Amino acid sequence: MAVKFTNDVTLSKSGFLFDHASGQTYTLNPTGQFIFRLLEQGEESERVLPQIVAEFNVSESTARKDLDDFLRQLHELGITE
Amino acid sequence: MEKKPYMKPTIVRHTPGGVLNKFGRPPQTVPMRRIEGFDVSELAGEYGSPLFVLSVRELKRKYRELDRTFRTRYPDFQLAYSYKTNYLKSVCSILHQEGAWAEVVSGFEYDIAADLGVPGGRIIFNGPYKTRGELKRAFENGSIVNIDNYDEMQVIEDLAEEFGRTLDVGLRINMDLNDPPWHKFGFNYESGQAFEAVRRATSGGKLNVVGLHMHTGTYVDDLTIYSRGAQGMIDFYRLIRDNFGVRLKYWDLGGGFASMNTLHWAYLPAEQTTPTVDQYADAICSVLLAADLGGEEPPKLFIEPGRAIVDDPFYLITSVAAQKRLPNGRRAVVLDTGMNMISSVQWYRYQFQSAQDSGTTVEDTTVYGALCMNIDVINHSLSLPPVRRGELLVIPRVGAYNLSQSWQFIYLRPAVIAIDDGRVHVIKRAETREYVQQFEQVPEDYSLPREPADGAAS
Ligand SMILES: Cc1ncc(COP(=O)(O)O)c(C=O)c1O
Image (cartoon, rainbow over all chains, first blue to last red; front, side, top):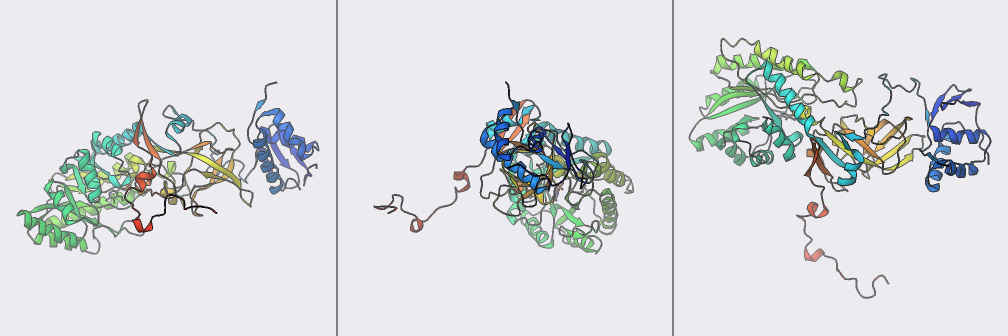
């Protein structure tokens, strides 16, 4: 299922995220940016995990736990629905 | 194709002040990978985590700075290290090698000093509870004894009788200097109790009052407490000299100097509020040396710092046991050690760093200790990069009161190592369960059968 964004957001090349509706800003680290770009492109959240494992030097179990954590955080911060 | 190095994905919300905290400093992202050239992860690998680490060089530097600064201002000066702050034998011994005398407050501490080889004449015995036997031994060894209360004075007068000679004693006094004032120790100056105590001590003919002692608090960063205290000491001395013919050999202004840790309720960090050693020395010495004692040489000056010497040279290496999200979205980290090992978290807002290069993105984090108790929080708000189970953190400045006040609870207490000039010495091994339970025994009546009964677990 594709993740829905709550507001209009822009992620800069340096990992700076701007929420146009609230004016709130965030910083994402490179892995966070990688995931965010996929979600932004409408990638289904289940399809993100294999791409992380393909791109980064990480085990699937660690990546899964971290991805869940990250997705939950996006939701808790009100960035995704 | 080579895969990219992985970091746990993070998103950090900027607080209204941007990523700067209220002091305008960037959050701490610089990892602390080494302590005096030693790799933190190698130390933990070899000696375990958690692990206390003493930098001997820093310890000596602290001592020497205090000693030199006071001695250049006040020639007849002697530092007596406050044992209670940290009485690991190696710590005390190093400080004695550097020239410190011992300031002890119990028979237990007195024995540590004596066993290390500190001559009796270089031990100052304070504390509100000293047994008759301990007092006797102290006088026999020629130690300095400062009297806390009338009951103790009575015991010492009895000892004088027993010895058949007058005994030199000091009196502990207190003054209304802080808010709330420290009235626990000794006799109060303003109310006239201290004056009465000297009258009582000198009138019995068995005691010779040769010293005054005053310890006004701990983590005292208000310099006027020392300058007003020193002035009060002078005024009081003049009073008892004129009235009772007392001639002081020493005055002792106790300890209390602050360290570089920041208190929870402080608005500014300690770097901006803790006076320098020069400032403490000026506050005390300039007042004492300006005293008009009618041509008499000023008495010897003792100070008894603890915290200001041993807090900063100790580090605690600890590792991350777990990471979690709190219902409000905050990140929390659980450590492999708790407030039983660093009880000063009650006073200090410990700042600490990751020992790994975990990236520069930091997040405001609640740091929990390992105890299964809700109050065990090491830091309510620490900027930490993403960390994972097993990753190491370093908490600096943990040397004062933590080790001597640590309590064994749920876990065994860790080892303490000293780093000295490229070498590592274990100065205290990690506890074992056998050590902790060595004095326990289970009476036969309460013993469980060793062999399972026939058909066990059926
Ligand atoms: C009599 C006496 N001297 C010295 C000290 C050392 O104090 P600090 O560690 O604050 O220097 C104490 C501490 O309580 C004390 O009671």
